[in-house]
Length: 330
Image 1 (cartoon, one colour):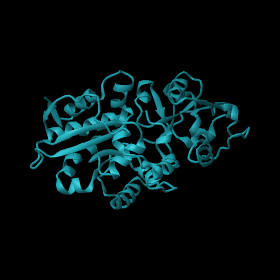
Image 2 (image 1 turned 90 degrees about the vertical axis):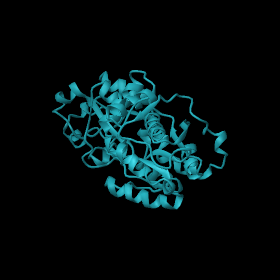
Image 3 (image 1 turned 180 degrees about the horizontal axis):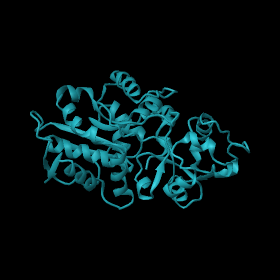
């Protein structure tokens, strides 16, 4: 899954990337893509014989989304070059700005804070999308409307424990719990980020290290994957998670509402090279059939089928598209 280094810490490395990307991860993907036939997505006039390169980063959600795009574009009639599974955000981004990739799914928060170098998120998700869309025009990229799916940070609690903790549903209720119940599992980077644990606690009226707030002994620092298991097993009451991670449902965790809107928005959206979209404007309508269907619940389910059940991203993508009647099996 995505690590935190794929977000706000990318700004400086992006400025330094000058390598030729074909030697840096933009090879054709090795995972297969199952055949599909038209559903509500139909062949597009002018698509036949035209090549489109699809990229994605190399974690589960990006692989599934990348395969969704590959399948949709193949059914639409394009000659698709599959370059999903690029190792890291830096080469994936450079593939877009260098016009080596025609289409990727990207996150508004990643673009705003990492790629565009802004220091403060925009709390309103629509306003942040519009700001990113407008800024990316200068980079030759067009951001189509985003999904409601928001793969941001959050804290989750075991569902069976939530009731025992005064029925907690939101982060603002942390301050109402006894000090000994304010226990957290986080990964090391989140514990020290300027948009991580300490400022999050400050936003909700709690001080790390304060015996009446959150004593340091209440914090367990773990590897990313271990946070989910530790939270599920009761090693802590509240674990740091990504809101679209499939393990949330698989482990029956309940995500607490960020009711003071501390965490940035990371809404996912299709991004295309502007010249590609200008040549094939009907691509906007094609992705408009897909994007509104992508919710947090949907991505949790799809991610779980890969991370928990061990299925291939291409199979998961096709099954979902068939269930939504976007395509049929080939």
